[in-house]
Length: 157
Image (cartoon, rainbow, N blue to C red; front, side, top):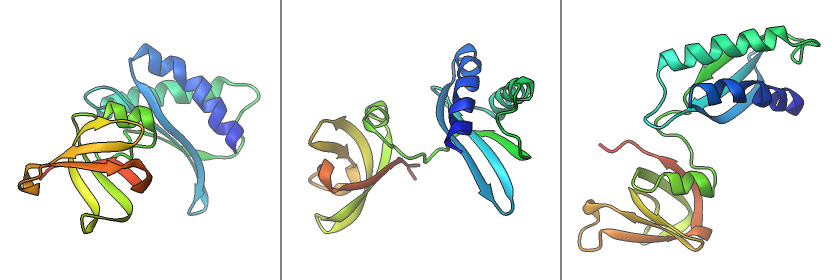
């Protein structure tokens, strides 16, 4: 099904470029007896429901016009934001998150914990640097990159 994902990426790119959105991810998966084509979009400041509707309508029209049909089986098209607590999957996304509040899960304990939340202040090849005023006398934490299992944006409470 990777050919479906690649085709959808090619078809959706001009639509996203026209509206100044960017593609976060595309999934084509079978769940609960049905196929789902999920397209995750984003833009600085986040996307709205209206943004998702615009992309969904335009993408649906373009996919329906393709011959031969790249997705011959019935499917549900879902266009959405990757979410307020989206994963930070690669170097580029980590660097874009500098200044954002994030959650980092670790493979093993660091300072007695395997999970930290704070503002990401810097990223380099060796470490993530985070700050959180709740950490007392040492509000800055240097997290070695090789300990990071997952990183995601987080909502600060």
